[in-house]
Length: 121
Image: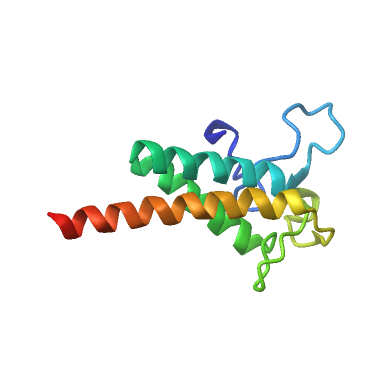
């Protein structure tokens, strides 16, 4: 996933499709980025490796900066790099919310575990 992170347009994010010949190649959506966020958060939590946490934070920051996660935590479907990700598709799907919620819970556990171990020492 990290190899697919694309900064050529929109300042980052994963494209919905991998191959240029697939319909939707220029679409950047919540589920692609949410799954990346979720995996990075889970790996950070289970391995303690800060590189994974850094990726989770980077994805979260990008998704919120672009507006795929709104200020009231609505998770919108996606955006297009054809307009540098300035227009949002405001459709909401529950699985998008779920993947970010699970990742956020893992990040909370990761951070809490690190804070607890600092206080024990």
